[in-house]
Image (cartoon, rainbow, N blue to C red):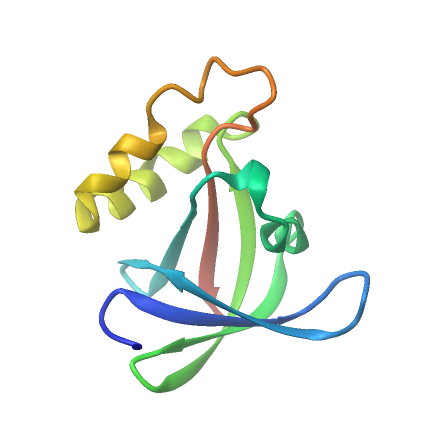
Length: 118
């Protein structure tokens, strides 16, 4: 399961204090891990990273200690652009998910959880 495209993100819930593990698809940007949150309005886990927090990412059988934060497209369009570019370069079909949500008033736009080594 944990190939060159699937990882597991392990973190402690901000409100609950419980440990969660979430499988995601990731792209690399140097030593950083970029996780695109498809349909972010339907998912809650990324809200734990509105502020930078510690997490661990399981990649190819090895847990890596990292710090992650959610980069929200409507709030930080300049910051999210290179992250989206890295993700779409790895997964070109993901570009379809980016189409059409920018004009939706209920949308936060694209969301990426940007993970950097600690």
